[in-house]
Amino acid sequence: MKHTIFSVLLVFSAVFAAAEPVVLTLNDAIQRAESESNDLRQTLIDIETAQTQSKNNWTQFLPGMRAGAGLNYRDNLFTENNSASNQGPFSYSMSLNLSLDLNGGIPYLMKNNNLNYQTSLLNYENIRRRLEAEIAKTFYNLIAEKENLVLLEDVLSLSEQQYRKNQVSFDNGLINQLALVRSQLSVENARLGLVRAQSQYDINKNNFLTILGYDQNIDVSFEGSLDVTQLALNSETLISEYLYKRPDIASQRNRIEMLDNTRKQTTINARAPSISLSAGWSGSGWTNFSDSISGGVSVGIPIDSWIPGSASYQRVENASRDIEKARLDLRDIENNAAAEIRSLTANLNNSWESIVIARLNIEIAELTYSLTEQGFQNGTVEFIELETARKDLLQSRQELLVQETGYKNMIFDLASALNLNWEDLMESGS
Picture (cartoon, one colour):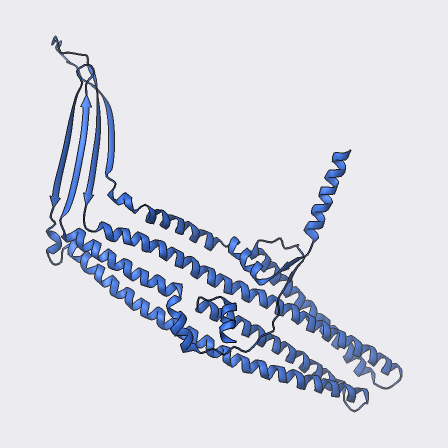
């Protein structure tokens, strides 16, 4: 009986725990997204592989080893072997061989292994920063959608209040039936707009929760504010300070260095002498065991790579051309990155002007609605004008919401373009 009661208590505690609302901060969402990201997991596997190669560079000097064993049969077919040394038709053999090829290109191969590991780390950082920006934008977009629902609820509440006032006025013969019907239609339109916005919010929220690895049935709220402050940022200062820190630019520089190492390795392998070392041991026999040991060193001098047009000669030339192409790619990456930073900084500065105007429009719309409502109650303003004033008030509030959300999103995009934490960017611009 005690076990049954204890099991029931466990079930109820699990139910209440599952029903407990979850409050998500932006940092919580980012951490969850990083832990759930398949792209980051695959990149971690690449990092592990590159790290293993980098840590085991010494294996380039590990000789190739081959061990062998065999059982042999040998006998006369048409005659009888009466030799005293005849020990039977079966015999065995064993062997052990070592080989090692040495050339001047090995150090460059080892350098490339180290650079490949560094590039894997940079690639992880690049993917993580961009994921962080996307999660942050989605997070605040959902907050904006939630605030928009509040605005629509306020509009619905205003419409219902106005309808009740109009009903009283109609009953007292102060307004006609057309004004009352229009007031009722306004309520239904406000309710429809709220339902549609709520549906879209639920869809977007569930998609976001899926990305974070949460169950869609949990009660979740997002902790954050759209309040923004003006940032004073200079694009050229940002470019000079942060451009070279971008992971894609650093990766491209690593690629150029790797290609240069590959060129040197290819040139040395194709034109420099190489040394081959070999050693071996073998043994055979049953009773009369015999063995032998061997060793050798050889030097190979390539000739065909010095002949213009040969395959080896072309490989050396193509390696140099690859470096030039990579340098041109680096120039394009740097130019595009600088243009992106300039564009985002300019848009951020211009967006603040839009926020200032949107805030002013709200003040004007609120005053207009208040005066229009008074005029309607006094019978000097038609209902259509009151409805227009209400729509203008809603649009002005929604416009400010859009501008503030866009400003936040541009901060995240700029921070990602600079490979910088968005909070550090806000501190540097405040």
